[in-house]
Length: 91
Image (cartoon, rainbow, N blue to C red):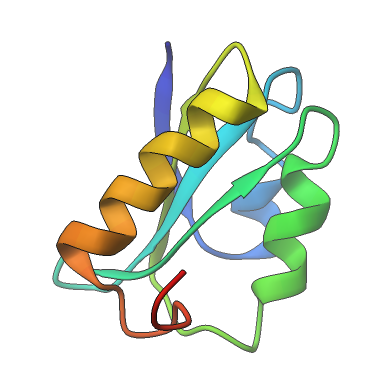
């Protein structure tokens, strides 16, 4: 599925597609991942805006999936491997 990276601010978030479930990563200026999460179809922009001001980041990268279950499976693997700083431990 498609991937897209944009600035982690309201203007950048509003450019993201909202038509499929996504896995998103809030990235640091150096390219590390501060947070990984999923958003349902139709809630991508709203979900990312909830993180503004709470999780530091420079960019946000999304990857679209056909199902929320597929996005959640990949999210789980990323959290186990990368252990982003702002994800709850043991998710």
